[in-house]
Amino acid sequence: MKIPPKPVSAKQRTDRTPMLYKITSVMELLEISHATVYRMVASGQLDLVKLSARSSRITSASVARILAQKDSKD
Image 1 (cartoon, rainbow, N blue to C red):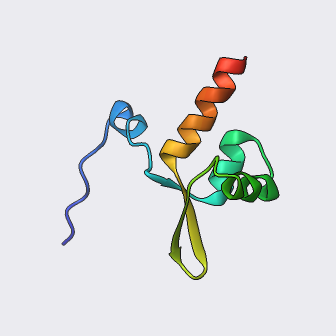
Image 2 (image 1 turned 90 degrees about the horizontal axis):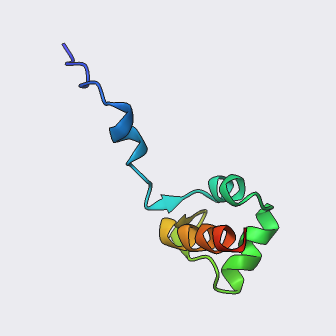
């Protein structure tokens, strides 16, 4: 018999920022296209981590940096 997981409060869930984002998540967070994500990677604005030949992720630190720049412009 499996023991059910302990309930997690809403505060605990919101404090859990992923260290790596999927490309689609970055697209939604930054409100940009797939091509723009890769242009930003090529220019060094976003940091790409290759997990395998077919899997890539973007670091949360680089996404946070872009979001901070957007907030300072607004």
